[in-house]
Length: 279
Ligand SMILES: [Zn+2]
Ligand SMILES: [Zn+2]
Image (cartoon, rainbow, N blue to C red):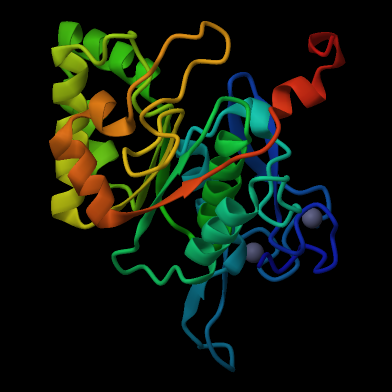
């Protein structure tokens, strides 16, 4: 809580940070309700840690809020989900997933936490929910997090190899408290390339060994899901495999050990939101 924020502020509820979209990513900015300079430290960043003129000084809470905002910025949450909040009512078909995300948020205690794999057809609000969860974890609990879209990550890593700094990209993905992988298993219809498979295996192994949580979304269901083996792409009609076919046995078994799998069902939110798509 920021000492100069309004506790009942509808934008930040006293945290002192607001979230805006800056280009493709979300950024945390000081909320409009925050008095400047800070009423507790008058802008110095330090406050007395005891009584009397000789009391030692400590960092003001406003500085901790600023640090949390910088942490939020490094999470690289996608800008189009600026309104995604965990406090929002779940969408039809997403109630169980919303409950699972809330449970992960409420039970977070900085110890190895179980992750979450949200799967289901495109447009069911999976990414929306993951962004809401990461936003809450970072801003409320100070969790370090990173959001990556799998195909974008692969492109970045290919560029990183050419520049000779692939580990600069991989290292934070292994070490942050929560890594969100969006569109797990997305790629060619025939499955991942060898490079994609190696990268995914490397990231999941690093996190498995470090006992760090993964939160993932996928359009592919696990094989034990009753729709998993036979689900067809609704636009092309092409039969698609299950998640295990897409990511390989090794990655899949590690996800099963460390994550809860939740199906997100219901209507296609993108079609509901875009009347031109409704004939
Ligand atoms: Zn505010
Ligand atoms: Zn202050």
